[in-house]
Structure formats: C-alpha cells, structure tokens
Length: 239
Image (cartoon, rainbow, N blue to C red):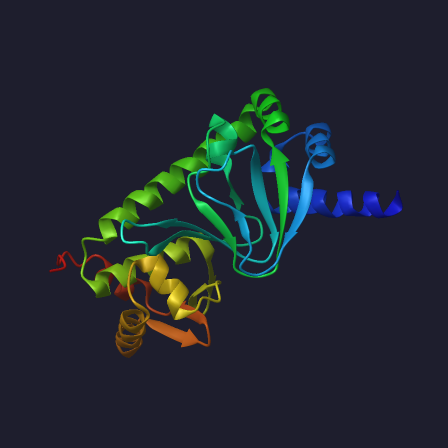
C-alpha cells in the first residue's frame, strides 16, 4: 500500500508539473492516476504501430520516444521527438479511431497511459483542460504543414528550418544561445529532415562554419538565431 501510494504521488507530481493535466481539479487528476497505467519500454521497443486501435493518451515520464511513418519507398520519416512531459496519442484517444503513426522508444522509457474511457468524461467536465488539448493538436498540425513545405526547400534551408522547429519544441535558452535538448544522432536527425546521414553531416558542418550553430557531442546549440532564421527563410527550391 505504501509503495502504491508513493508511486501515485510521484506520478501526480510529474503530471502536475509537466503537463496540461495539472490544470485539472485534484479529484479528477487523482481519478485518472488511479485508473491509468505506468508501462516500461526498452530501447527500440515498439510502443504502438500505425493502424492499431487507439484507446489511450500517453505521457512520456522518462526516456525519449519518436513518432514515425513510412513513406512510399519504405523509408522511415520521423514526425516528432518526444521527451519527458510530452503527450502523444491524443488524436486516436479523442476520436476513437486507429493510431495515425508509429511510436518507438529511443531509450529505455516509462510511459503513463490514460485510457479514453476515463479521459473523455474528465475533459468534458473540465473545458480548460480540453482547450489545452486542442491547442496542442493545433500546434502539431502547424508543425506537420511546415514539414511538408520543408520538403520543397534546398537542403541548407531545410536543415535550418528543422533546427528552428526543434528549438521551438525542445529548446532551452541560455547566454550561449538556444540548446536543442535532444541528444540525436545524425541518422535520427536525417530521418526527421528527410535527408541522408551524409547530407546532414555536411549541412551541419556548413552551418557551424557559418557561425550560426555549435555542436557539443550529440547536442546542437543555435548561437545565432537570426542568422539561422535568415538561412531557413531562403526561398530556393530544390532541384
């Protein structure tokens, strides 16, 4: 009983401090936690696959997750990288239809599941929380539209826009610039940008030489946001 209570308190503290669920009244949040489920996944585990029934919203508690789809030629495309506090699976959880993407653990991860049968009555009773879900979905639609548009740009502009989008989603500002707080390999970044690893490496090198970014191991720091924005706003279309 004590272990369960401690577990519930830890999850409650996390959800309150890191997600829109913190806007819920205490009683409503406690009910979701009681009825939810914490699941653990190992690195590279499939959390769910596109087309599977969607019966839950998921919160990343620890680790990292990527949402992907496969294009017409069988190549993986990364749609989002998710870190602790990020929520996903809400589309299927809200409309009751199948999953729209694949979810894969990038690291050993803990995921808290909140089932649709419990979520929907809670959101209906708490419109502020429902509004936060709608805002999050609108942001994802905008990001998706940007990614489609990015596919028409030459590589340098595409990389610039992709880095700025990651900075908006996962960036931390400091005196040095904006640190993209994702330890991504160049292969993972290439899957997100729709480029090969070699092209990603070359473009990052050129951006570093242009003094708009700094690379610290697997982390990227945007040292000149305006300079990178100018590159990202280039209108050259790829051949």
